[in-house]
Image (cartoon, rainbow, N blue to C red):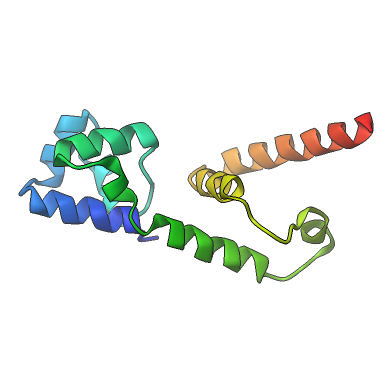
Length: 132
């Protein structure tokens, strides 16, 4: 899925007159990994964003322009989805910036990792309820 980060990575790479291979070489990663960043197949972590900003001689915040709006849309989609018993159990009326950040992180996990995170979160909630 194409994203604002993908857009800015491609934009600044072109502005600097670099190829994907040149950027990948400077980051010491495979070209295909960098290509995935530009196409939105995967997203770089914060350390990689900082390195990319140095390659492009910009602030890393320049690579994040528009991301907050994307996250707000993603959260709106979640809240407008069909309500089942489980989703109502954990539903909140307001989404904090922390929750949006958590959602952003989870979306970058593999399906297996997401399942592990969900199982851990449910266990923590269950344990917390047991302690009451």
